[in-house]
Length: 119
Image (cartoon, rainbow, N blue to C red; front, top):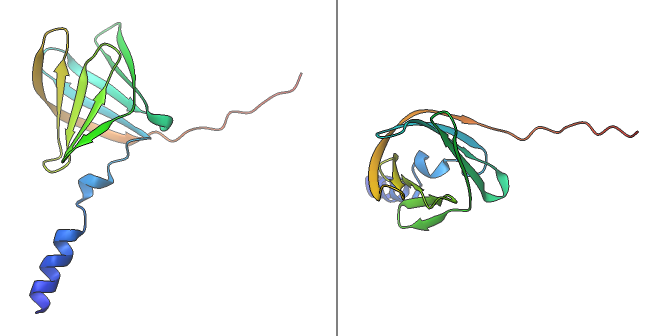
């Protein structure tokens, strides 16, 4: 009975992947075709991606489809995060190509209170 309860509890408790912070993270991904892509997930569902020397796009929000979390950018690129496998992929809209990406690093990006000076 104890074993059964342990299995049920472990099945109901979300894995660590579900604790991924969608509102304050900086991801560095290595993706075929673009090299390193920096994705910043800001508060208020604002996102941005940057790669190469001058490539930069913004986006907003994310949607969930089962274990997939999809972040769309203004150029119609999509970053896909699979919570079950903890893997990342990118849909490059211009090339109409899906690629699997390797997570290089992830860190928190907490907002900073800026001082306000009265003149």
